[in-house]
Image (cartoon, rainbow, N blue to C red; front, side, top):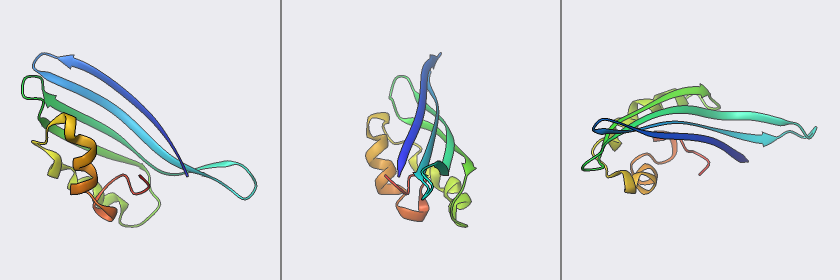
Length: 103
């Protein structure tokens, strides 16, 4: 399993904005790459408190039937300090609750 990601960050007034995408892929028995899971993410944080104000995920490539429901859980991260995003994502969005099943 491999992960590709793109992350763009900028400031817009009182918000820190993040536009990101990640995709998990695997190598097939024939030796080719196959995308198996992917989302685009729009994240905003207050520039002063650095707390998350928006976490919006859009499914792109889904492997399991429960994957689309994971996007409904991203609001669990609203209010989390930006510096704690990675740990909070693993804590608040485990397994089928989250986007990052293969982390």
